[in-house]
Amino acid sequence: MNAESETARDTEGQADGHGERPPAEVAVVVIGYDDAAHVTDAVRSALAQGPAVREVVAVDDCSRDGSVGLLERLSASEPRLKVIRRRANSGGCGTPRNTGLDAVTSPYVMFLDSDDVLPPGAVDALLAAAEGAHAEVAGGLCVRRELPSGREVPWQPRLYALHAVVPRPAQRTRLVHDTLCVNKLYRTAFLRAHGIRFPEGRFPYEDVVFTARLLAAAPRIALIPDRVYVWHVRRSQARLSISLDRSGVENWRARTEACRQAYEVLLGAGQKELARTARAKFLDHDLRMYVRELGLRDAAYRRAWWELTRAHLAEYDADDWARNPAAPGRLIGRVVLASPEPCDLPRLRELAARPARLYPPYARAADGTPVWSDAVPQVSLEPLRARPVRALPLAVDAELRPGARGTRLRLRLHELYGRVAQAGPETVDVEWRHRDDGDVVIHGATLPLAPCAGVPRADDTVGSSCTWSAETAVDLLALAAPGTGTWDLRLRIRFRDGASRDVTAHALTGAGLLRRRAVPSARHGVVLVQPYTTHSGALALRVAPGVRGLLSVVRARLRRLLH
Figure 1 (cartoon, helix red, strand yellow):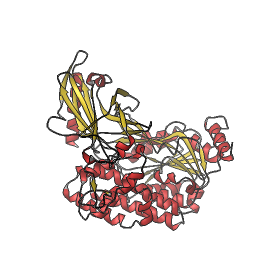
Figure 2 (figure 1 turned 90 degrees about the vertical axis):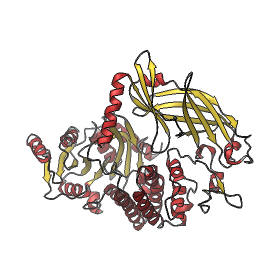
Figure 3 (figure 1 turned 135 degrees about the vertical axis):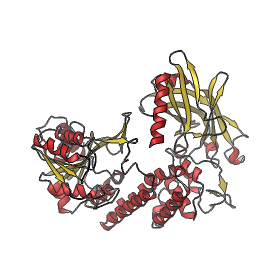
């Protein structure tokens, strides 16, 4: 066992309570603005961490809804709570966090937003990890909890799968992807010695820049798999959080500016590999997320978004594009750069999906080289030829049709420049995964994939029309068993050599294909089924059993209309 593993083991023992109780050394800075409904829950979750928390500094950014009164009443009975009210609203999150940081007297500090909570044991686990590894920073797992459903999705789980100590961030470039500031414990003196602060004023995505400044200072970092932060996602509330309110193009302008500054901070500190990773992360994460939503925006937004994106990507150099050239984000970025006007938005949306789908048509240049399209031939798809089949952006159509014997699901796998025929697709596994609880899965059949539209050949003689198909029944009543919910279609294609590829399916939207239907049920009386297309173009089903289910659908639709 190496020294790093021994450190991780010792850290784990302390976090599990086998060592001495950590002393009161941690400050938690809680920031809020007009969030009286949640701010005291956040503060109480910090106080409930126990004696390791020396102080909780609650910074109110000049709220008008009585938040300060609630905090001051709580502080009257809690000597560890200090309330600071700013005289003017800053317009962002960075300034109140800096205000709180300036007031901290503890050796370690954490940050907490007013609408989130710290789970029990979070501070003890992070403090034990930091001190056990002699680290300036300790980070743990954050989960995004969708409300009101309660569905939880881990944030950057690969980073926090195991206990680990990273002597320098350059040795774990994946750290650039975790731009959250709230799932970490920081040595206060380290932040102050290196002048690591948040951007001031109205600066959305301030934590992106803060994280870059932190990594640029090359701290020793301890990583733990413990849940240390619960990020509440409330999509139905009147005032959305910055990360959710992406309807205006100014949000995209702010995001690109934050990413630009993060790159410059890292590059200026000599962290070239981290800077390159930051640019790659923009392509793979930020760009793909917004491209999936472009179809929801009006023409003026799309034109402004396209112009901003082209200006940002024009700063990338040849080395940025040369890395993993067949990655979906890089292909999307190159298409945007190649076209002065928005183009191929539905197809770009498919490529931005997770997993990516490169949807037909599949064009070729005059010399036979695969290219993006006849309209944008300068974007070569040649790197796809070297990509392993398990990583290809395979496109599958899904067609849901009612029939005399129930609802049928028809699938069609498209050829991709001869790569699919070369790999030899044999079967497809069908499953439906519950949106709110990903552990609930209904497995369908394993279906043989039959060639259609000509005989598939590895030399691509048949061309883009070459496909494989499969068909199966959909047990809608089984999907209704857990109650009202949304189900996502997931497929696994298996190939001749044993390789497999997990994919989602493009929803065909022809006449009657996505029509809502009522299915008789002996148990529920009736089950309402609504097929629909997700933001990324994939097929999903909303299922509502019984009268209560019908009413929940009506209420949800009313909420969406009002919002």
